[in-house]
Image (tube, helix red, strand yellow):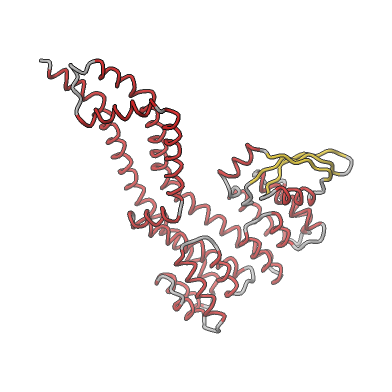
Length: 398
């Protein structure tokens, strides 16, 4: 489901014709997936609209994913057959990519493939596939899918908190990018001509003369300037999403760095709890978490945690020697002392999620104030290059 291409297929299944959309990383993978669905003589072509949507939303709908995992946990708990359960599960999913992935899993399981391998072939997240594998090996798929549903819900809540924080500045930046082009091309050129025709009456200050000279040059090379304008916006967006951009944001906004750290630890230890409930061994979990996206510090801590665990060090000592933050060390050591490591890790993740929500609400007030201040400065700047020169000339005529 992290695939980047959406391909529309048409072919035959049995004696009838079928059509649909499949997501894959390549044309060869798409053909293999369509074949696994029982479709023969398939013709494939790129569905550009669905591909763009896949790029914009690389993850499946979290509500549908949580619903799927909860449904599977309840059905397996009641002892229903896997093929029947997976066939029914596809009918309750609204996300088209996820529905096709579930149908592919059902087809592969009918052919005799293990559930975890079928999920891997269908493009489910690697963490989820590993937890399903651990659940199969331990004979405890119910706990594995219950843990997955819980973690999908927690991660969705964390993302919603981050989205609420980032949405106002993102809207402001996008509006400034579009409106600046409109000002350069549509609004300012007529004013530049008015000021040029009335230069004897309207004496522009130096900053206004420089601005309108820039506007004239911009419109004299409109095509090239517009391309550069678009490239600058895309470049700023790419930098903001890059590792360097995140580091700069962390340096400029220490509360943001704190939120990033806490949310990353909440996701990691929530996943640790779910994997442990699913039957995975702690060293294998630590290895998996070290491979997940995150900060270099967190990845290094989980690698060291794995090394100490494999060397026979107790969990209490290993988590301390790995270099985790003090609040993680205290939480995990308390969980080990109570004899309920999985539950303690889940409680730690929940506490960290609550802290992220509190910090996010606090930072939202600061971000709102900064956005309001930026908007006010934009309005004042616009007035300074349009209204102020005319008002100055009018007052000087008396």
